[in-house]
Image 1 (cartoon, rainbow, N blue to C red):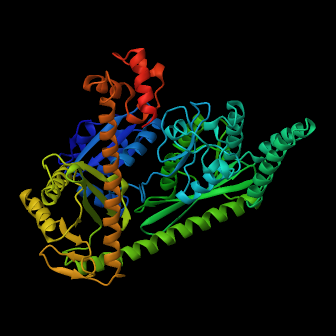
Image 2: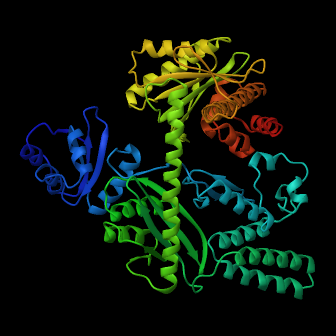
Image 3: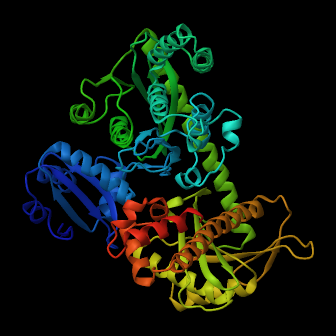
Length: 605
């Protein structure tokens, strides 16, 4: 992409643009992307910005801040539609519609690579031939599904290494929540059959599942295998109990997603109801920060965002027709033939479902507004208590984890508008400090964080240091060394001593004592505890990894060179531990005898 200066005349800018489909990016004077758009004809679209009066206040402000223009040519308008979405996700431009909460929603993962596949909860979908269901709107929702996995289908949720090293069934087998494949209590054929039953259940095809289970139960009864028939009877009863708690809203052929939107001046919520086999199976809402964009643009972004990772139903019912509806329908039909986007006035059952989705969207907008109001009040109290120059929006907390000076790690957690910003979390392996020197470690982490923040232009408003005045002043000294802008301010929190309560320190070293239940103290404690948890978890992994590598070197015939070859071949310690003798032999320099020795040694770790 070549930057085109907007300081030159509009006619010169337009001559540099092709009359083809593509995506365009406006950048400000600091080279940050402030707006991403798509066009069927790039020259024509940009001319509407440069030659016509701004269509809205947002567009006017964007053009006032824009310094350069870049563009990417695409083969089709549909390619431009999808590329625009990806670039918005990557750059989060100020003047685009942006997701309020970009957290990773949980998925249920079914491993199909082994005879006894594991069921687990993950936050990312990988291209690994496993099955993924979700995402689920919350951890609570996915835990409910995991409960059913154990109680109804008795499938394993333990890790591969736990299963591999068991010498007797675990407690879950005794309380009938696992079928103990680790001990051979179930055949691989029967286990795979249960996996298929779980797939039908998760896909909302309960009627077909119940019919199959009923037929099999009758077969067992006719063959006088009453114990097996009783197991299926209990499973049928459990599935029926779950299904009866869900409301039937349509005929059994209804497989729809019902999408509605509500908004206020600053935000929009899009809510989707999942209807499978005529039953509402669940719902979720997503929040977007908006300016004055039309409803159709917001729904267009939602559809690209949502169905890029979610199963596509037979029909998607929409409260408003999205922008680019034909292009979106073409894209969605590539993933699920026969799917239809339907918008307009609905009647009967569809109308009631749309009203339900609308009510959920309104509640999501209202809840978001209340949460933002609470944060505004807390930010004001933070500014007052810590003597800050301005109200903080992005706050980061730093903690150091070490054991006797060994394998020290700096952890940093970020909160934005009072909520965890997981993409802002960082670990720092301490490089320049030996021994126990908490001050120097804090200094290194602050220097590295602020230096990278200046490059990426994502500096925090407030950095909270876990420690007393000494650690605080070390952080401020590092800040001054970098000649940082005054945007960044500092505070620290010191642990309780002599029952004085936990103390806060401001940038000038003043001590702030707050009541134990003061909201400012509780919020900073929450951030400090999160930084500590994040750091300790990583530090434990480092210690475990170091011990594992050390024990690997103790195996006769395995030196530093072979250790490196093993780790490079398998890519991770986890995969190395799970490797079979045949897989170990495939590593250059590992003989069959040495592979057996390594395999036996790893079994006991």
